[in-house]
Length: 238
Image 1 (tube, rainbow, N blue to C red):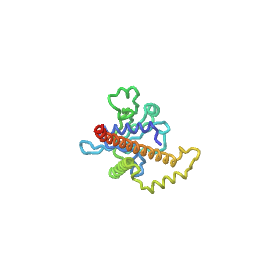
Image 2 (cartoon, one colour):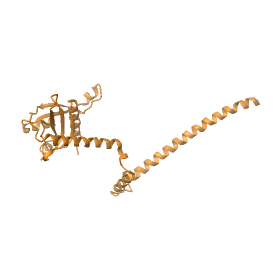
Image 3 (cartoon, one colour):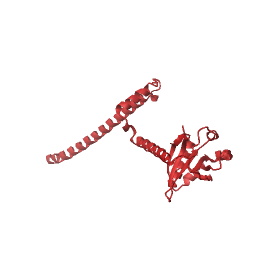
Image 4 (cartoon, helix red, strand yellow):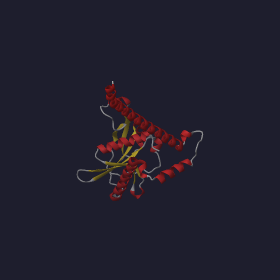
């Protein structure tokens, strides 16, 4: 589970890469069992060559010292760290690995911004990465990059379409599955069925009330029209 700080680093880095004109995607598995890089960017240079950059995001010292493999296989490779963590681990960072420092915008800066800020903070380069040859074959790396992009597009489309992707049978099976996890008769608000039924009943009552109000308004209008038609007859009799 990603922490809020990790998500903030991730979204800020994504925007940074986007503004640099690079294609970027998170959590890309590397060829040749080189691990999974947190963020990978692909940028085509004016001379037609491609530049690959790998970013590893760390928010705590224990996270920095994790035994998980660091997938620094790109032409340029960076740690993305909060300022405090960088001060604690800077002596442990290899010479050829760069460092980008994340700083969150303070509330005053957000309030004074002329327009809505696109990121929760900003990045500065504390240490430039040194160029290295790509550590894996470029063709399989490109394939992995494209596969990760497809994963994100597919995820976005699923979110956009929501439950339309699932048949009634699939939804029913999922509700049955969740029901088996426990039904608390003393806390109906915790039970998905009770909440669903309550919402449906509330929606039905609201819909019926709206229909009744509309019909009543229509009846009153017809009544006024009828009275207007009958008014000349009354005047003639008088």
